[in-house]
Structures are given as structure tokens and as C-alpha cells.
Amino acid sequence: MNPPFAGAAVADPDAAPQAPRHPHIPRYLESTYWWAYVHPRAVQTFEREWLVNAILWGNYARLRDHALQALRPPGEPRIGGHTLQVACVYGNLTRKLHAQLAPDARLTVLDILPIQLQNLRSKLPADDGRVRLLHGDSSAMPLPDASVDQALLFFLLHEQPDAVRRATLAEVLRVVKPGGRIVIVDYHRPVRWHPLRAVMAAVFRRLEPYAAALWREEIEAFLPEGVRPAAGSKRTRFGALYQQLVWTR
Image (cartoon, rainbow, N blue to C red):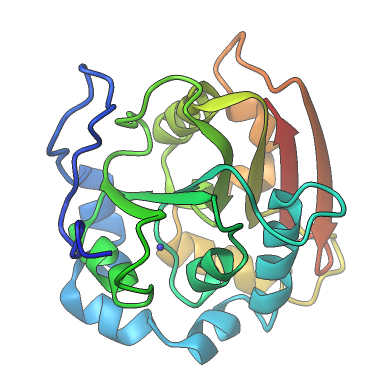
């Protein structure tokens, strides 16, 4: 979601040698989400605070703030260490995250779409060397094992097919250090009486074909066999339409 980067694709000097330097845009992303992320007009349309908040039924700020709080150790006013945000996010999430970084902290934001990295670059200070924008695939991250202290996935997993979702989760667990945190915010199956249940089901059928998987299964079900966090907690919000997971690597 800093002049050395200038909004362009950046290769990580510590990248694992098998990682592709210039990953292609996945076919599912181009065919399913061209209107939301890939086309230049998508950025012009969706990069509006009021629209992002409306899409989440007025819950954007609360979900954002709870996620950022979960990245901070209890009692700490700032986010320390090296944070990885997997995928850019419309709205001010990354700007708020950046504002909460400790002076010696670092932030890496990884995204497969150069246009999204360029958009995010415009929302962040241009002269902060603590921030790195990295062109890469969440399912094959160009980052070494155990190279970040914590990771944030904010409404990413519902946009991925099962196999990509599974690979993304495996990659996040690979790159986060033992004892580090993984914070996931995404959709969840709402309670039966939820007034928006039918509306959201229709939205998923029409626009979000991979999101219904998070209504059928817990996110842990998409972890590869034998890959598990050491500990975890889960909270649901807004009649269980949304969930926040906090895993310890």
C-alpha cells in the first residue's frame, strides 16, 4: 500500500535467488479484478476514503486501527522492527502504519502490480528511507526466510484462488521470524440474522468469486499441511462479517 524507489519495481538485494525479478501479473487478477486494481481508472475510482469506508459498511477505520494495534507489542506506543505489508491497500492504512513506526523501524510493502505501488508511493513521504516498496508476488515472495518481524494482510486473502491463498499463507509464515506476529483482517461468515448477509452473498457471486471460500472455511484450513503458527487468536466484528486473526510464528 523515498527517492530510491520512485514508484518503480524494486529488486530486493537480499532476495532469495529463485525468486523472479519481474513477476507477471497473475491471470486471475487480470481477468477478475482488472476493474478494481489493474486498470489505471481503477486507481482513480477507488482511491477515495469515503468509498473505501462505504465498501466496508463504515467499518474501515475500526478494522484498520485494530489491525495496527495488533502489530504493536502490548503497552508499546510504536510499531518496531521490520513490518511487511502484503499488498497495497486503498485508503490511508499504510499512511497510518507509517506514522506509527518507531524511529528505527522499517516497512516493506509488497505488491504484484506496479500501478498500485506507484499509487502508494504518492501517499507516503518521499524522503523516508525506512520504507521500501517491493514488486513481487505474495505467493512467491522475493524475501529471505525469517527476514521480517511481523506481517499484515489486510483484505487480501478473499481475492485469491485457493491455491494462491494457500501459497501466500505459507510464504508469510516462511518470511516472518520465529516469535513474530502475523495479522490478518478479512471477510468472515456473518451470523445468520445479519441484515447484510444476502447482500454480501450477492456481491461475492457477482464481483468477488473467491471470497465465499472464507465463509465456508476457516483461514487456517488454507494452510499447507504441516505448516502452522505456534499460537493464534481470532476476533470477529460487525456481526461476524469481518475477522481478525493474530498468529505467532
